[in-house]
Image 1: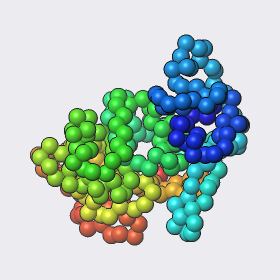
Image 2 (image 1 turned 30 degrees about the horizontal axis):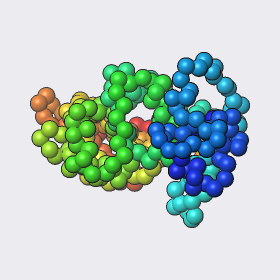
Image 3 (image 1 turned 45 degrees about the horizontal axis):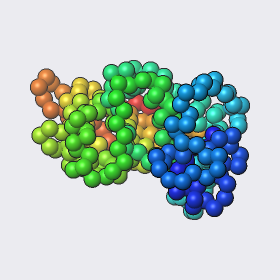
Image 4 (image 1 turned 60 degrees about the horizontal axis):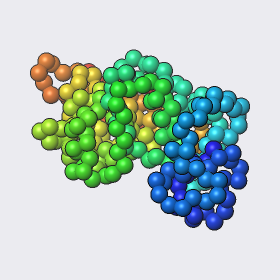
Length: 257
């Protein structure tokens, strides 16, 4: 099944659905090409059972970052993207795994393979609320985050930088975050410290993940906030930048998985 919209079908200039048994568009209006369906056309029919594919069959085509030249397309399989990345993330690891009572925020790059793995793992863990942010203006995002304060927050490094002023507001929306997750690139230490200090949760951590689309493995480093006495504002933990030295004082530590 091909799921797309009329704009993409028109711009492609070719029959994108030639290899699909059905083509469904998300548009509510507009003239449909012959044989193309809308979502309401699927209602009232029997839900098909799961179709299990070979673990090494093509599953997703994504792109590289372009740091070593022109971005390249990379083909992933169930083995490389689900078994190696999404499945471990769907494990209920102590403290850092998504819980059923969590409100999960994602401000990521949605065409990226990371979002594919995140979607599968997060939906398996069934958090109470999912909040998806696509904009970068902190004043626009602020009302949404205050209405649904996250307990787990994941985003691009640039999004964390842009939303950083929110951590200094009186009603900062990150006050209840237990776990921050950043992928794609390193984050400057002052940004990490601002978010860890904005959380009032004891033991808040910053999880930094590095991975490459052309490979099937990633490296994770977890930076906890330093312990604090009762009533004190959280002290920042060590930065998650490779090669940086931590000057946060006694009690700081990090571990890898």
